[in-house]
Length: 275
Image 1 (spheres, rainbow, N blue to C red):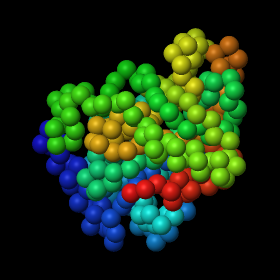
Image 2: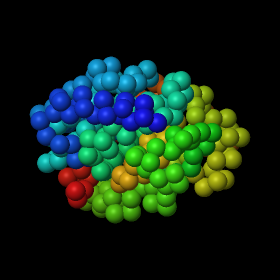
Image 3: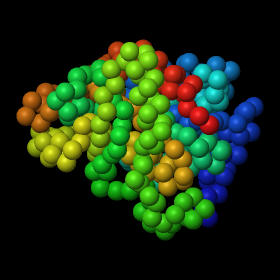
Image 4: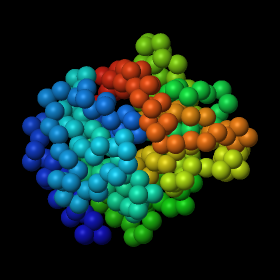
């Protein structure tokens, strides 16, 4: 436990030593959405490999940099690329950056991802506000001895995605004229895409979108007492009885096509989030 805390402290101390101002909002950017970091001004860019104890992104569309600077009047820390359980990292390694954000004083986290749409009213290219999630990874980042300095043994998850922040994002989408779906995100371990039977099963659970990320980070953020809001880019339709072959390149391509409205919505949301 002490080793984990010391690693968090060392990583946070290194990042703090590179900063001029206190980060206020953390952003985690998913597949094909890293270009959002280019909107940050007065930016300090820190490659992951320079941060003590940070994992390194290995997936196309995840470039692997921290970008810290100004976005819509707020100081943000942006993860340009995330870590995934399927890359071989432990769940604790996947969520390590969340604990570092908390140590840096960040209390609000905005997460994004690319996912398959399971709700038949969705279409590829839609954005979805995450209202709740289902953990179908087979693991949890909080397993093992609890570190009381980070959070409680049994953290509440009744508002995993903060209602106030969700209302703000939905309101900004309305003002921008962006169609914003809402729904439940289910996370799988990956890296294989789902079979038709698996998709039908998860749709029966009430899931609206399926992906391979986000739930571990959101769990750790709630455990640490952070407020969380999440936006998904629906990159393909994952309907069990209508499933078509899919590649990661297709996922990234659709995410890139949806970037302009995604960037507009994230910027407006950051501007409107109270600190």
